[in-house]
Image 1 (tube, helix red, strand yellow):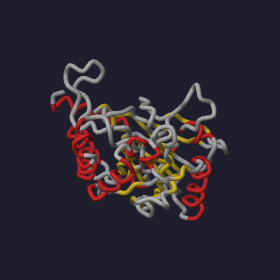
Image 2 (spheres, rainbow, N blue to C red):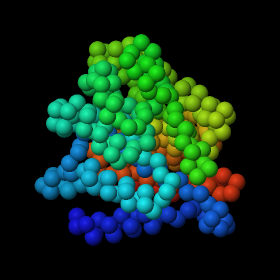
Image 3 (tube, rainbow, N blue to C red):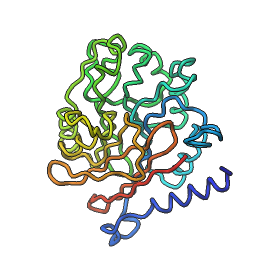
Image 4 (cartoon, rainbow, N blue to C red):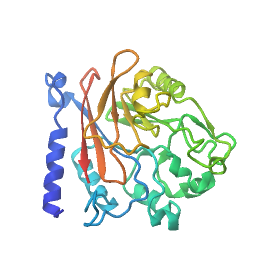
Length: 304
């Protein structure tokens, strides 16, 4: 894509996302605070764009293009969080050769704020993941993995809180069950805990104790499993919990044009979003807060 066309397309997408929904139209512009959430998932070590002859994603993706897009959005919007929902590792020779070093360094250069862990982030073992952490200038959150008897004990966090323009944002992580997906030797004594129970505990802390205005779950559970009724997914997590505003998902490589809206335990809306895989798309969700911190939102997937 030519640079001029790329910039025009980006500007058009930004213009669409900048429109708050109707409930906030009664407030003057200076009373509305905007928080922009940018997110990726399942990039799988895809550093370069797809070649022009790729049958599915010709000339799409690539770290350089994503970095430019993120930089342009940050110039327009001062209150941005950049998040990743896991499976950063595995998928190209870059990972086979560098073991994750390049992925973490590039994410750090793009100023990612936070990420969670996917099952493929254990592909070089828990020790291999740990050895690359000095290259990550951002934290990892995962609330339902107990790393007590591993090298990651006290390294990852269950949640992290950000303050953006007077808005308090709590972000916690939820990981998929590793048994059956990952060799036991790779995750060692990591204990998997019930994701719904841990999500409820995280939201209790973030909403009741920490008084967060916005609560985000970085999940690697998967969007939906049609033939596995008992398997937990993002849609089920949204429906079985309360006080989560947004679930940013991964694992199932689900391409959504915009977030899915799910009603939670008490009938409140939860946004669930996922942007496919391989860095082809960048997710963007804008939250708007009025003077009383009532929120509205607009979301869209941006093609890289």
